[in-house]
Length: 52
Image (cartoon, rainbow, N blue to C red):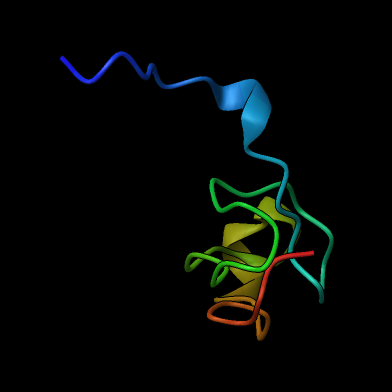
């Protein structure tokens, strides 16, 4: 073990387009997701953009 543990509270990234909280840290690419979690809307255009 390297002594580091996963802590979701340290992941603070938000999509720059729809503002949904993501699993990426600030500045990392935003993972693929639906706009505001609405599956009927399709994939958000902010996917892949740097998280804010």
